Image (cartoon, rainbow, N blue to C red; front, side, top):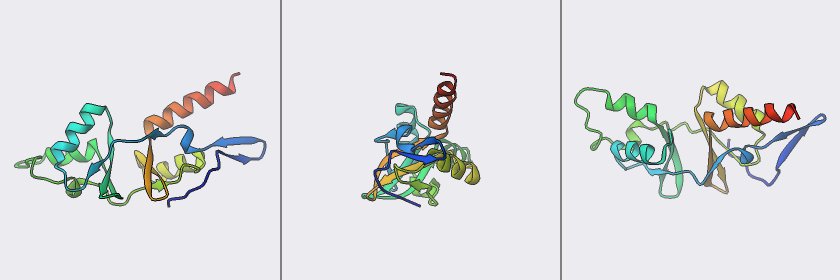
Length: 147
């Protein structure tokens, strides 16, 4: 579902809907699909993130979350140094372009019960939009209604 373009906002009726680009986390940390689950865990802790886009070379192939890591590492006799990210990741990645309307992205995430959407432009990862970003957007938009 990747889209590209330069539209900054979508007008619906009299209101302007901001795009995901306004609220996404730019330049997200990524991990290679052949890296260990331990490496993913370490990166998440170091950078304080819960989702890592998974790359095979320059191509997006999945997303791994802190929950994915926790589930796999909670199994008996599992060594996170020997399990690859590819074994734990979700390969059905939700992806949008930076010009995607925020309401459409939020609806897509809710429909799929997804904690994140990867933002791609010209087949390159340029951002990630997570539920935390969504809550920050909601707070900002609600505050702006009071002005």
